[in-house]
Length: 263
Image (cartoon, rainbow, N blue to C red; front, side):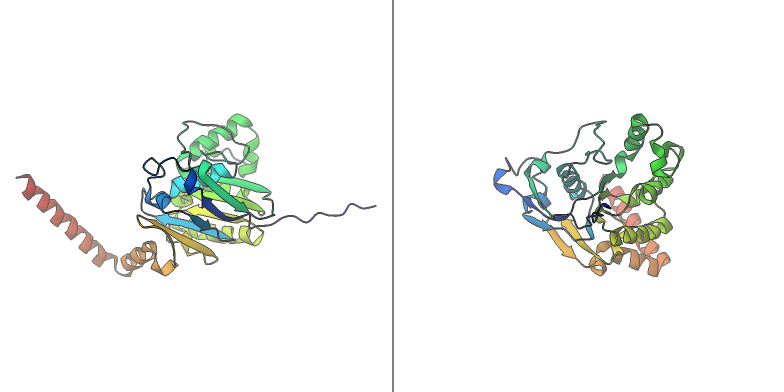
């Protein structure tokens, strides 16, 4: 009798997270002193793509890192099979998060952390020198930073997966960022779910998503056209010469004021 085919599970996999506020030892200590954590209670995830945006230091990476650890991924990056630490620096925030998940089981998962991807590439070679075939057939240390990122997105990722990404745009040209949107859309169509912290006005343009803005006031949803990423880029590209003239004249005035103050 032929075996009955089992239906593969598809996303979404994450529904929301809850901060267990009553268990937090002190909101004066890091990372609980961050405004986004102090005011965090309940955060729903979009079934396809959830974006975290905000200024440097707003807590995007800290929150994403805690989420990665809570779903069983290595805080320094990689899949659930990675268990290494070049420097154990992740916070204990994950211990105070409660994740609500769907009944679907992710067939794949990966945490991309741009700042430590070199360490992940080294770990791939340490685990199995022949494992590079999963990343497009070339060892990542023999590719440029951007090429190795693209090899990861194009060859290592697949549908039916949960992918957490911290600043994936850091090594990608604008053209590659646009191509990444197409690639991400294809994965989403095949059941993937993404949570991405980014500064890219190109990547956050993906329409089937939720954008969370992290500020000193906490976390709130914003429309793409309301984001500073979109507005600043749009205004600059409308008239680069005029924008530069204004920026550089402001810099010159600030420098002159500093010289006066120092005399």
